[in-house]
Length: 100
Ligand SMILES: O=C(O)C(=O)C[C@]1(C(=O)O)C=C[C@@H](O)C=C1
Image (cartoon, rainbow, N blue to C red; front, top):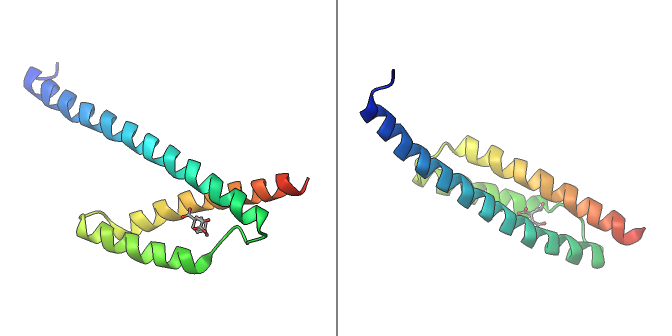
């Protein structure tokens, strides 16, 4: 049987976790809405789906922000790379659809 006080504390934390997860989903949806427009622009003007120099800049910046925020910079880099990999997949799909 869980202590009612502990149960209340856990419930409070979980409410914040659920709010943060919802914000993350909304922020990611907004980011992908934007990158899909970038994908259309790139496909239209024959620009490559990936821009390694831009990614290098983003990774350095995010690692710095993560450090300042007391978040593991390796995790921040892995997360950004995971998101960017999906963005590049979208860009390639948009370019292929435009050619078809
Ligand atoms: O800025 C771009 O050129 C994008 O396509 C966006 C983005 C990103 O998701 O941040 C994705 C792929 C590129 O390699 C670099 C950055």
